[in-house]
Image (cartoon, rainbow, N blue to C red; front, side, top):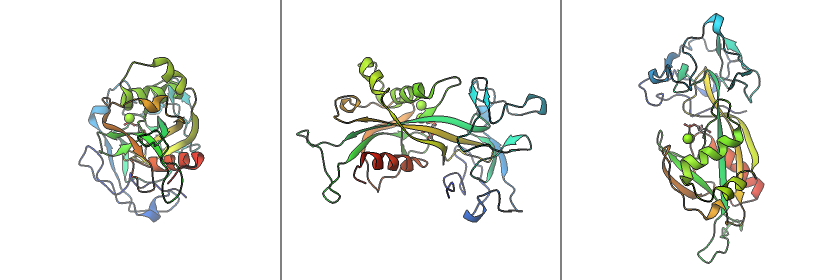
Length: 271
Ligand code: RP5
Ligand code: MG
Ligand code: MG
């Protein structure tokens, strides 16, 4: 069964806070770990942000855990999460840190990930085929993140009250396209997606009390005449953007590669 890796045994991003060591066998809460004494850390700049929860969750002002709470979705894709000492508990297990770290919400922090793909082509327009597998090579729009310099799906947080379908398109436009042309074609392109994943993300910002979850959709440009023909341009959230050839040696942020593997399977592409 799945165990998170990137949110364990390292220094918490943008801080000097060391996570309490969590060896593989102590990830699940069901396993007794009596020495476990992680620090509590919430990045100071989170406090008072309109997109963040209040810092102290008091007994009389409890958010509606495991429910839709006004405009905020506090439901986890991983089932009912436990509340301990008034705070949500990571559904996978220990991360070596309490508090919210860099995340705005206690409990699930919902994101959306648009996986925009096309087939790799030669200069003459013919599709490239891998000489070994004899399968077509899939390319995805990848951005390089500012925070950890890793290549990633151009995803982002679902705003309060926002529909996931809007987030998928908005984040793609903000991070990878930066263009206001062809709006109608882009609009249509983003109505034709297929859901490939929803659930927990092994993100390096996760803590024992706050974690990332996502809904990932594939938007595939089969003949390369739609979004596939655009030149990309990195937005504010991205250091770089490119059409990335996908194969088994590609490394991506968090567990994004697991999401991409599913797209590879569905489109029967080279891996
Ligand atoms: C990831 O963080 C999610 O899968 C999504 O790609 C992203 C959302 O956070 P930001 O890009 O807004 O930091 O783990
Ligand atoms: Mg963004
Ligand atoms: Mg983003």
